[in-house]
Length: 142
Image (cartoon, rainbow, N blue to C red):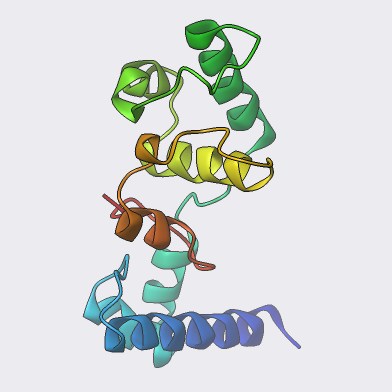
């Protein structure tokens, strides 16, 4: 399979996924025009959606852990965490978007037993649900 065929295939799958989300009245991080372009193989639309920086690097994970450790201390850093707003400014300074920070916090929460991060610290259920999509998050999450 050529790279262009793979790109077309992935674009169509992603477009159909977004169209299904839209049909189910779930948040979709792209426009209807982008969905149409993905489904119908418009290379510019595929490139635009695929170019989004949706990967959360190890460096970004380490940077967020450092922010949390500095803010809350080494022991039980999540125990004192009650609201994302407490760390928003520090997170922005390290260049991590709100959406990626919430994804990482939720990821870490799911890896722990019990409520390591109080549920009220993660935005309301609809935002948590949207942030856990298996498709690129983009910047329109919040």
